[in-house]
Length: 143
Image (tube, rainbow, N blue to C red; front, side, top):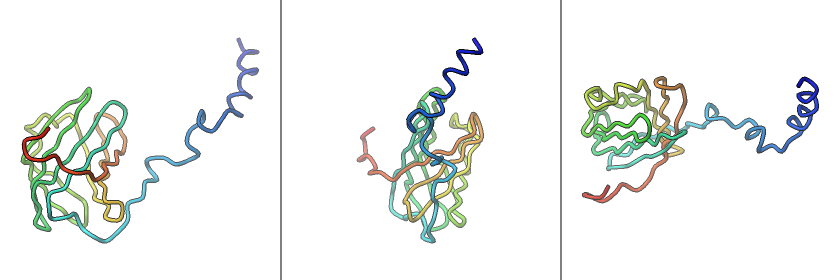
């Protein structure tokens, strides 16, 4: 068994870059730059990690506070419509999301103006950053 390990190890080390990772570009190195602010018109963001998909729809925003609809689909599904949030230097604090099934999640959210995306830093149920990219919001009544 030990001989097999030493025989296979050089092939793994010299394998194609796609087998060894992406060459050092990790989610922790995601750019988040810019001095703009979250758009005041309705905007939607979506992204996924593993088998979880996350959607945030900014329903209204006046430059300081607003309302969002949150949705998580996958093994830890949850939905929260009409949650209030505050935006302080693009750090978004969502206020009343606990009664919506999101108590399984501990997270922070940051808006990245230059990238027009949100970075959700999940702490619980797993520690990972998820980039939610801007997308067209569904028309009223569409799912």
